[in-house]
Length: 365
Image 1 (cartoon, rainbow, N blue to C red):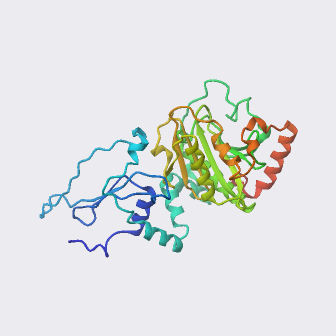
Image 2: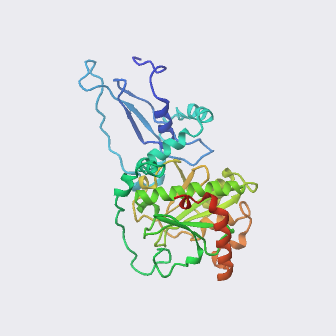
Image 3: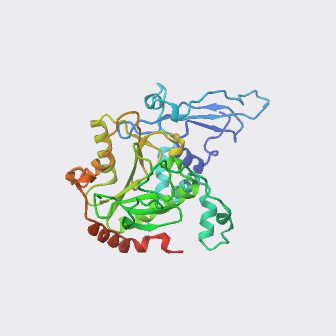
């Protein structure tokens, strides 16, 4: 046709479409109607199956050529769909039209994707970062924290609770804190926890999400300086307070892809459907608060997700990392077999604090 495809389009929008993987992508800038065949969002035999995307361009309202300017459709939210139905591939599906260009751009525009992901992950970050960089800070001071549920009984992880083992705490921010994991896999195995009572990442207020991201970033840098990769997992099942488990894996042991493959393999062995989700997607787009789930995040930002429908092995996230393929410490798969004395825990916490201090953003204020 009537549109010169070589002179229209946007590399920024293409990059977003590639990373966000929308189920429907509508465009209206060129003022013409066009509907391409659906395209896949994964590489066959190399990545877990994902939902397809459909691109539809619409003409202007009341255009003289009487081209289509309306598109009627119904869409079932991802969170309400059966996962097998969600990733079903139509017979006429094509390869991803953006993959080649986006991957080429990655080599020449390092960092651009991170900026986009931060912006779309949580828009409230924009104002907050300005205040920490020397601005007047009025916006962040005026914002009131969102009210959230209180625990129905004693909670081992609410920082104000007498049940908290405070000697394990190694860093405290405004909304989150960092603590050594009880029965840790390695000396630097830590938990990122909200100070207030939140059950899962999906329940977090935006200011808490921001600080979680700050801790993740600091831990990635810290582990990298020690020659290790960052692996994070959350199990929102049979737990009442969010615990983000963060474990360093020595880079010499395995690649990020090896870690990913170990999780996928172990999941298949145990009939657990572990699906890859878009790197920069927010879990709030995928599950509703209160929905049981497990997810693991790699140092690259890649995530694997499982919606828990029935019994789920409580130690799964830890077992995979303890396996011969990753840390090769299978005897530590159960945290109850890794208990330390109070004195040993205090020593481990003191050592971690000292090592982490140059990376701890809470000490910069």
